[in-house]
Length: 166
Image (tube, rainbow, N blue to C red; front, side):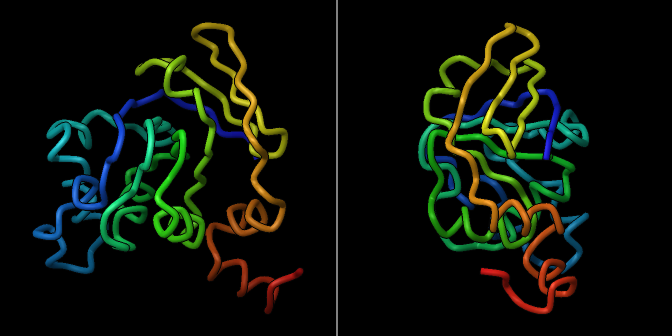
């Protein structure tokens, strides 16, 4: 799986309420809810982000509540992946379950800038920065999880395979 896009940069400890505030969860229409994603950090973000773009953050992205809506709205915006030094564990699992690729790449935050164009190769564990001509290696995502991501999430994976292949 290869993903390519423009980078949007967020800091450390971006919590699920900053990704999507609880006050916005008054409907099950995720296209409507997604219009308010990251409004506490950047009220104009949803007007600027484009399908395929990639979010990069520092430490502990997705901390806070176990709100499943947080990775869902990121995916609804068309963001192809989120890269961080590390993720809150429950956010990580929720994102994989809905088919949103998360890449733990310690140090990437320090050398990738907002607006850079990058390519993420999930199979090889490489991020190529086309703006700076630098490469960053990260620990490859386990094959089992890349299979879930390739199917668009755990529900689609199970529909196709009937069970988990271990």
